[in-house]
View 1 (cartoon, rainbow, N blue to C red):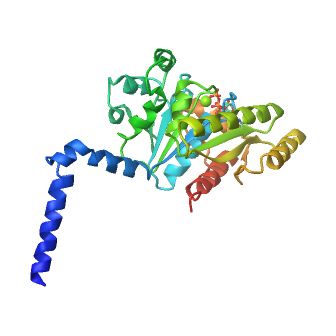
View 2 (tube, rainbow, N blue to C red; view 1 turned 180 degrees about the vertical axis):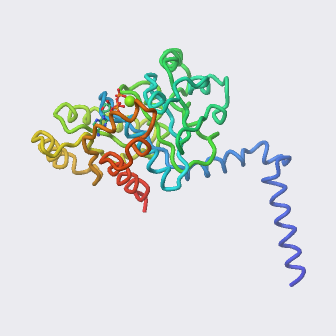
Length: 292
Ligand SMILES: Nc1ncnc2c1ncn2[C@@H]1O[C@H](COP(=O)(O)OP(=O)(O)OP(=O)(O)O)[C@@H](O)[C@H]1O
Ligand SMILES: [Mg+2]
């Protein structure tokens, strides 16, 4: 019995020093650490908030959904991938020295570019991202830049990426890195066309770059039940796209959501009792229980 125990201990030591010790040959050459990094990162829920149509509430959702999830005790990173830098501006992170462009260029590590706002961590973006995207034309594997960078990120529960209203290099990167996407949709006729474009894009990305990409749901936004068009568009989407999940949560029209960015605050800090705060908290509960 004692011999068996000694043998077991020796085996454990052997395994550790052969595979996991920093000085071991296998550790250095065979990328054991990268394997485990990938495993750990795969526990992170990476969500892209996308819609090729502009002004649908992507940035508002990234900030307030992110804050609501963080309030549930989760560690959340917001990644601004829009050269407009709206998310960064929203949370007063636009004067930050370092942005995602510097991280991509290798001028700073991802970890050192992260800043803190409320109980969120953010990597800002600015207009330099537009120039960088142009210079990336012809760059090999350019669709995987963000996916590879996120392997260096600390252990987050959720990473939310705010995308620009176009199929830019960074939007394609977000869709390649993401496990899920959320599509915020205003209840108006033009949104239906935008949704069709978005679904075509998702199919192409799944075919060529990210086969496991999944649409978590369509998020009805700026919902006003008194407007007939709102009800009609909602009914049309539910009927036509019955194969897609529509969140139970409807984000209602709320002026506090419009005002909050002027103060650099999420709606939870600016007006916690308002409909907007209630709706985003309800949405956060749906998102964190999605996999259950
Ligand atoms: N629930 C809401 N009620 C009222 N206004 C809202 C609501 N959600 C967002 N808005 C407002 O709608 C406008 C567009 O929102 P937002 O900037 O989040 O959209 P976006 O999709 O990120 O835009 P872009 O495509 O330009 O990046 C903003 O002025 C925002 O304050
Ligand atoms: Mg935006």
